[in-house]
Length: 568
Ligand code: PPS
Image (cartoon, rainbow, N blue to C red):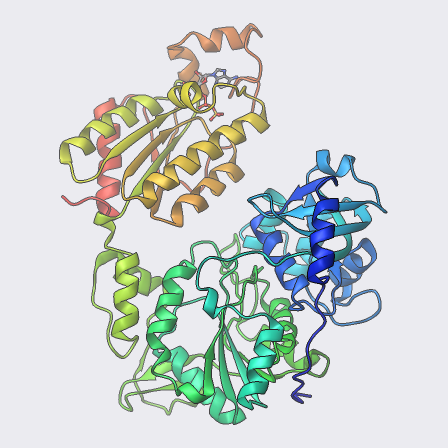
């Protein structure tokens, strides 16, 4: 174990000449536009990061990975790496056929020789791989609400690697890293996997690990996809660069890994180990709650804080890399240094700032102490996360037709404009259907497209520091959640449920639509002949019965004030 092997790892790319030829031939093949996650997976398949995989898993390997964490031939592999597609696309593809895999701009990156096509049992995949079929887990949510219903498996022929325009010099393939280690004479390398900015606790952890293993250090942050709501990778890389000169240059390297994380805790830790082995590392740090997905829908942790270390330990020999396990690092005030929580002497004062507390301090512009982080890192974070009253945000009203969403949203808009400071845009249901979604009807599919468009525009407005007020019906929980995720990447998302009952809406029937719906003249009418899933995650529920509009809008205003989004 942990024998340094600097020999190149097999890649799936064909020669430059073959690639040119194949590219022309592939243009005529059925082609699949890769999703962001699939593009990450394909990159690591092609460059050997996912070795020994030779392509997207076929059905037999998939079943075996899901069931027992191994490929069908018994090789340890903990994560299903599958190509999920739509039913419509799958219908036109049969095993034995080649398809072209294209990036978002249409560039052909690879050819997949389809060996298998099947409809996976997603609840089973969720239970077995992620530990619960609970949509509070980001990967389970992805599985059910983002991934297509059909999987294609087969060998990949690599034509070209996805192009990245950002931080080019900081990205290395497994073979580039192996060559670098060889050149530097590094025979022992400990990898530090991270999806967060580096604070002092992390630095101490990496110092201790390198010392313990007498190894060089590879800071290996994930820049592909991480947990929704994480600090974006642009900001993080600037933070990493800011602290790099606090490390000894001769024994430290920073390299970015374009992995799409699944937040699968223990299984993910094993996967990370295999990936780091492929990148030429001999050791890997596994800390507390490695690749943890947060709380489940009952408010409990999905995995125990040290489950990942246990599973890694049990498979260490096969992973081929040594684990350096650490308990949580905490700051001991009297000793003015970081120590693993279980080594702190009795009677000492432990200081710690959680991720949630850090976000609160940034949001509210409160001091972040020097013992916690480096001033350079804090200033990058402050640049990215100005206090809330200077950030953009979205207020998303949901409720039945005629519930009063638009009226309240209009009143709120005027009040916000009166206050000034940020531009306000109202994306009202009817207005959106006129300008953005005129071709859409009211089927579930069309409603979802409509809401995602609204979410996209709202997230852009939020990103650019404005206020977006949305007032569609938005009857489906999963779609509202998708919009929340889009917006929360850039600012606050305030869901307001205008909870007027269907009886009251029908009694008011301001547009005469309920009457038509009852008569069957309008089909798929929300609340009458189509579902409305009332939110359980609303920041505010307003009751419009016996309350005037002005008061409702004022309630929202008070909520925004309480959240620090506007100043009194
Ligand atoms: S959705 O589900 O969110 O996409 O709907 P939305 O775009 O908000 O709907 C906007 C208005 O369309 C009118 N309308 C219907 N609503 C529901 N079901 C059916 N079948 C339907 N047909 C037309 C309705 O007046 C909605 O207006 P609001 O502003 O909600 O009263």
